Image 1 (cartoon, rainbow, N blue to C red):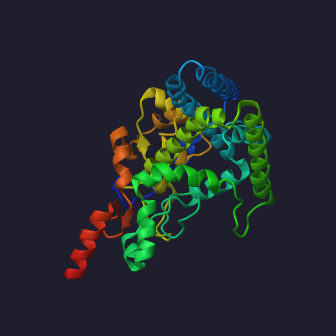
Image 2: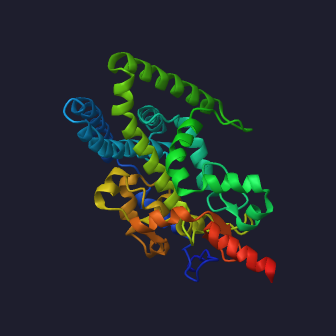
Image 3: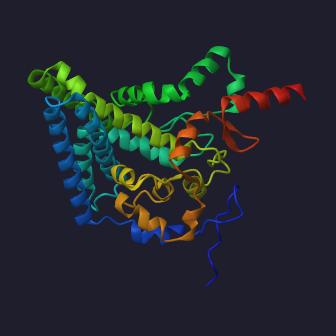
Length: 349
């Protein structure tokens, strides 16, 4: 039998095997025991952390703030469980995935059905220059940026500033989840998900205000939730917005290359890898979203093709926040300064 033809990459001479689906299939199966254990321990620890936040405020507010970090990590891990449920990878049963997805979505204030749909669109179009703008961090090309008026350029530049991404970005993401998607084809369950989540969130906040008081709620729980959103924005940015990330026009776009070469392998310290549910192995997740988070590392180690993914360390993941535009000539993301210098040089030649 002839060997399967490889999927050739525009970025590298090293091919991704055509039979990658068969290679990853052994890992794309949920383990009920592992999933239940992860769910119980994560949600259990989250509830304990939330109680400790309340108790420690009587001891030392600095201790409360310190506990906000692991609490934010547990919120992130809870979100990853919802994320896996949205992909249908956490349990083999769709009903189980949806039930747990709704519950963990409530715990993280995320409308499960809306997020699931938008995230699926992100997976289907990541790295496609002709399908930007849904479930991603919107990115302009250098040519598109300089073709815009000064006000549009200023607006885009503002939204790509690192300080904006890490301060206003979490607030925008939270507010974005509060409204149903006003696009053709938006499903009824998506609309209901947003409304029911909003009602539940408002109800929960109202109860907590009556029981704890507004000041206690804001000073005790808001920091942890905000930190979880901030960490999520940073992770998502570093997973796709790095210098050599794969981008291509739709006719040339290839799913496998977009997954492995357009998603980073973010190497985090072990404790952060645990809190983030192995999502730093994003190249594996994008290639095969049916692989549950607790099998991503084993899948990564299973085949040399995963070594093709760009590797980022913690310092790299901070540096990439400066990248803002895609240079189609150089086929890489660049900073505003780099783009301006090349644009001026081109116009002067």
